[in-house]
Length: 126
Image (cartoon, rainbow, N blue to C red):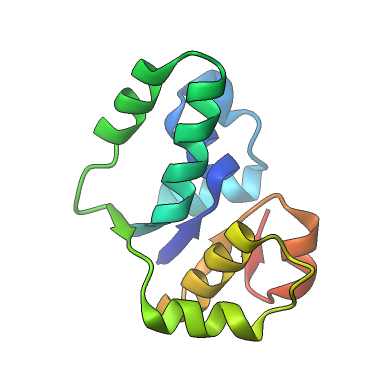
């Protein structure tokens, strides 16, 4: 099974056993069983910003080192994804639109705790 991970899901999943507890059981199971985890590039930028704000850039480097193929695949922003973003409600934050559009583009389930995303995208796991 292929999934797309949003920022919280990826951070908590890769952050070790203590952080994994923040994921729902269903989200943990889906990520554990995934044959491929797609990571939208915007997710990495969100996490970079978070680590920089907290003065922990070395933790970002550690997170990047855990994105090993073949399980993890970072997806760049493409014209197809941008076009899909334009079709999504503007009430959704732009980075969330990119994440949803990416999941839609690769036809994968999305792992996200975001309630707004869960109401707008049918195949969300939390």
